Each structure stands twice: as C-alpha cells, then as structure tokens.
Amino acid sequence: MVFTTVWEYEVPEARRAEFERIYGAEGEWVRLFRRAQGFRETVLLRNVSAPSLYVSLDRWTSRAAYEEFRIVHAAAYAALDEATAGLTLAERHLGTFYG
Image (cartoon, rainbow, N blue to C red):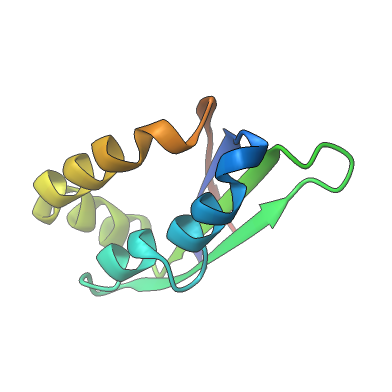
C-alpha cells in the first residue's frame, strides 16, 4: 500500500511558473526526495476553478520510508523549505493517506 502525504498551497499569479518548476515532478523537492529509498513520485495539481490553489501528493513505498527520509534529510528539508517559503501565500498539510 502506498503512503502519501498531501499539501495545499496558495500561490500568487506572479510566482506560479517558478512554483511549478520547483514543486513539480522534476523540481528541487523531488530531487531532494530522490535521495531517499522509498520515494515513488510527486504529483502536483492546480485547481481548475481557483488557479492560485495547488495540491501536491508525495508518494512513498511506506510510512517508515517517509519518516526515515524526514530524519536523515532533516537539515536539507528545512533549508529547502526556508528557501522556497516566499513562493506561497499560504501552505497547509492536509494529511497523510494510504491507498
């Protein structure tokens, strides 16, 4: 069963292209995730009726793989999170899911 963590972002129009590049399937977040065993993929979705809203789905082979990544790569995660904070107006963790 795949473990997925889901985030929602509000992105100003002027930053959308940069946000999509960094958070998309070949972006900086995915490059960081690929350092860990168990990462499967990131899917970035934009809301059709509210284009400033995005949802990302980060898929892992297991919760344990995700949690190990967060421990082993905590410093790199925090640095990238800080470096990309200005791209969004708001972000919210919607939850973690199996499926």
